Length: 369
Image (cartoon, rainbow, N blue to C red; front, side, top):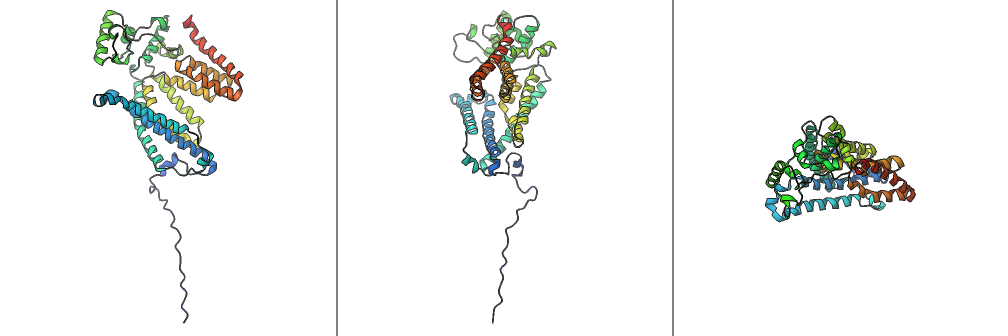
């Protein structure tokens, strides 16, 4: 008797459950593209680099903690902490800018677990960045309080300029201490006067004692009193001094926000969430902003120099303004020459340097003569 044939019905693959909330990594689509095809490899590569930059910021953030909080416990080994953090951050930046071959880019797949972990850690660092951002906003409406004497000296220089005095010759730390609520340890000590012939850094008590003595004596040889930056460092602060508002923090906060806005504008749409994330997680930049650090302003100018590199006059003008702001900007000149010479020839780089140098000299010349 013939047995009836049994038809085995194979069960097809189960369809993935796309119920909302089931995939814990779904939100990461904002930072990691799902399109890993060869045509989209540039975006995948940029996001890979962004992960390494996030790691660099993660390592830089703890370095903003007051070193005196752990130095008494670690003693001589405490100096290794910032060395390791900054060294690791430098390595991460090298990895971010390390070129990858087309073959390596073609093998790019969905983000690895370590990349996802770094993204989560970067998001956690934004908490500290958000706190610093909130501080900068609140402090913009409070009396000036800057933890570096460079900003206080520049603000005082703007005041001296409006009084018809030369900021480079008439600047005085004692006037600064009388006008601004600065702490003694926010100043730059010199090996002169009571600090002469000593190798260790003064303590807070020694700072305060020496400053009190100098205020009574009317002279302060132990503290840096002179303006050490080019003229644009304080010319930008003249409007604040004109209205007797010595809190210049809004200027530096606006400079950083402009940097972020420009980055948002020029990057690919797929990278805009990374721009916001890295900008908020950049605790070092937020700390510099809160302190009214001049680096924020000249960095903005240098970025504009690079973005406008295809336009001779605009690029050269911003370079001239950067050169007239802080000496560190001068170190970008060789790289600018190489960039322009490779694209437009050495003669073009000479033209641009002449324009930039003329602008920088014109701004500072009245204080040189």
